[in-house]
Image (cartoon, rainbow, N blue to C red):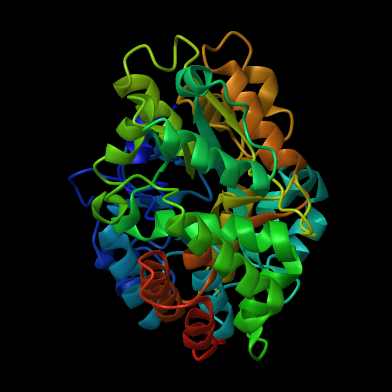
Length: 443
C-alpha cells in the first residue's frame, strides 16, 4: 500500500499530500477571464500534490487534453493546506476553478447552501453507466438533500481492525467477533503484559474511529443521520450514550496502551506498537497497511498481520457489513463557471476522470479504486488478499459512513474532536459529552 498515506491519516482526512511545492496561484484560476475561468479562458481544475496521487491526476488531465483539443482543462496543483486556504478564498471571490476538489461531506454541504456548486444529479441521470460503474457507497458523501453535487473518484480507505497474529498465538486467543469478545481480550492481554490496543490518542481523530463504529453498531446509520441533520438532542439518544459509555469502559479497563494520549499518528508510532508486539490490536485506516509493510520488517510478509471489519455489539441494530472512513475523493463543478467551461468539465467527468488508465494506476500504487470490477487487477499482487478485503468491504457495505470530522462543518468538527479528547481522557462523562455536542447541532 501507499506508505505516504500514513503520515497524516488518510491523505484525505488531510489527504496529507505532503510535497514541498505549490504549483500555482489564485490568479491562475481567476484573472480577467471572469469567475470560474482560467486566464486563457479554458476550464480550470485544481488538484492536490503528493505522490502517487499528483502524478495520476496530472496524467489523467493531460490525456484528456490531448484527446480534446477544443475543450482542455487548465491544471494547477496545490499542497493540501495551501489548497484549503486558497479554495475558500477563490470561491468567496467568485474566482473558483471550474472543477473543485472536495472531500464531500460538511465542506460540500456548505458549498451547496451557498449555491456555489452545480447540482450534478441531471449529469448522472444522463450518464447512468458511469454512475453504475462506481461503488454505490461512494455517493453518500457527495449527496446533499438527496441530490448529487460531486463526482466520486480515485480510491477508497475504510477503517480496519488489525491484529498481530504472533501475539494472539502467544496467548492462545481467538480474534474478536463481538464487543463482549473485545472486552474479554482486554483482560487476557493485560494479564499477559501486552497492551490490548494501540492508539495514537494525541491526534484525536484516531479516537473518533472508535465512536464512529460503536455508534453504527449500536444505533445503525439512523443514529448518525439524526446528528448530521441536526435533530434536537440527537447526541443524547440512548444508543449514543451507550456508545459513549462503552468507549469509556474500554479506557477504564486499560484497553489502550499506557500513554496513548501522547502518541501521534503522524509519527507512525502507533503502527510500530502493533508490529513490534507491544499491542495485540489496532483500529486504523486502510492507508496504514503500506507503512506497516515497509517499516515493520517481515511482520507483513511473514503473515504476522491480519484484519477484519469491526465486531458486532450485542443488542445493536447496525449491519455488520457497515464501515466508516473515506468513501472516495470528489470533484464538484463551480456554479459560477461559464456554460462552455461546464461542458468541458462534464466531458472530463464522463470520459477522463475514472478511466481504465487511472484505475490501473491506482492499483499499481497499492490502492483500491472505487470502480466496480477493479479487483480483477489485484491478481498476482503480494497484497492481493488485503486489497480484496478492502474492495469487498467498500463495495459490499450496507452503509459507508464518512469520517465525522469531514461530514460535519469545520466548527462542529473541531468541537467534536475537543470533546472526544476529553471523553477518552475521562475528563467528561458521556452525558456531558452529549450536552456539549447538542449545543452545536446544525452548525
